[in-house]
Length: 336
Image (cartoon, rainbow, N blue to C red; front, side):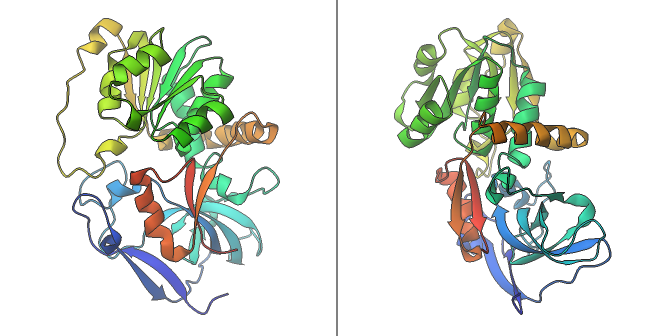
């Protein structure tokens, strides 16, 4: 174990898109666990788009950080010291920690990790919060039925890639929006999407949807917002369902943009639009984890992680989310 601990803090609130000046790497003492806590050596940590909202001094669904606070996120790691009867030294666990070499976790809030089901980074993606978001967001909010068309924005990300595969398992036609030809190929050739649209290479999203979803759209899982969502709203079928999971197109905007107002489209389609927070399904997390684990173990769901090595590179990994660097889940490898 190291004699000291490195930990990233929020150095200043960003104005628009964050940069390296928003973060500071501090050297601290290795924390000590109290009763019921675990000292965990972080193997992998998660960076996620929702963290941008926590960098603002504004009310949101996730509590904002204060300047000087540690950067927080999901981690997978090894128990180095346990003050709990539930876990022993050497156990692998996942839970909410900090961007650090070592972090203290409450034993009641962690889950065991089984490397025989999937590699450790998967527990931050398909077998973690993103996978559960996809599971409940699609099945409970989207309510897909066999033969329907499901469209997913941000389809090559951690959530969207799982949404599309679950939709295929439910007998749907699946169309994804992604930001490169490499991502389009991954969606269609590896994950089984029926069609995918490179939004960076298309001038008219509505025409692209006419080709990819000729029978209209029954379920839209929205991770992005913006012009893609404007186009999708014009193609919604009668009684369509829209699950609003994220709006990454706007996360770095200082003001609220005003685009085409598409609410009149909902009158004719009688579509239902519902926001989605995975925490609302917390009492059912075990259900999702078991089903997702079974799908991964059987090969019915594939997953991919983009790994950035080194705790010192965690901010770069986070910033890469907004330029589309990642395919699948973006994670940081902190230790071997």
